[in-house]
Amino acid sequence: MTKLKQFDALQLLDFEESDFHLTVHGQNYYELVYIYKGSGIHQINHNSFPYTSGDLFVISPQDEHNFKIGKRTRVIAIKFTDDYFSSKNHWKLLDYMTNDPVDIMNNKILKELKLNFAPDIRKILRQTIDNMLLYNSTKQIASSPIIFHQILSIFGMIKESMRGISLIGKDQFPAKEHLISYIHQHIYQPNQLKIKHIAPHFNIATTYFSSYFKRNFEMGYREYINEYRVILIEKRLESGQFTFRQIANEFGFNDESHFSHFYKNTRGISPSSYRKNPLKQ
Image (tube, rainbow, N blue to C red):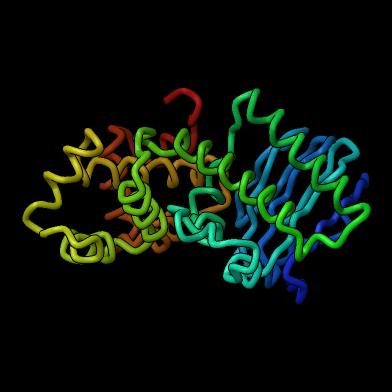
């Protein structure tokens, strides 16, 4: 697999084509990919998402992705290294940000589910991209405070959309956002989600953690984890690209039998039944 490299802190790439010029690839930088026009399929980490004008995708260094272009597509790619946000030369905005942009880029849920923007946010996102394109045509963007804040505004739109992705959808306090982000990041590592590990990480007493979670999120901690795991598992079942053994290994089950038992207890049907008729469940 090709691994693309970038050493500049920030680059803005604008291209339009009928056939994507790359194959499946990784990269050493972060990338916000905006679909200015066109349609097709975006593949990321074995997940496939139909795309159309106005869609935004988030790519991190640990990801691999590719485009299968259907209708001629114009792509605006905002590419930056981690140095771009670790430097505070523009101003100390990060001192009050509740989520570092790099943490947002690394959030696994953004690679599992597609961002959906409200119509008014889609318009604002398009205007933001147009502003950046206009500035990029005449000036250097990497050192520009104007571009810096345009990019931060995009992350604001991503965070707003992420609240809709969350199973809870009400977590607007930084501590709650960090807790949910931690769960999403470690959903494939069951041991890291045990209360004895997660409670100290957030300075919450282990004996109080379950009550704290239910009081703040209006559902049980184990219920949330199981529901989120099942959503991700069903995406793999629907794709047909994963065996039960692969799914069991990915999500930390002891074996296929343990995985099947968990799924049936949660959904009331076997994973094979869901795979055969996902739309009827």
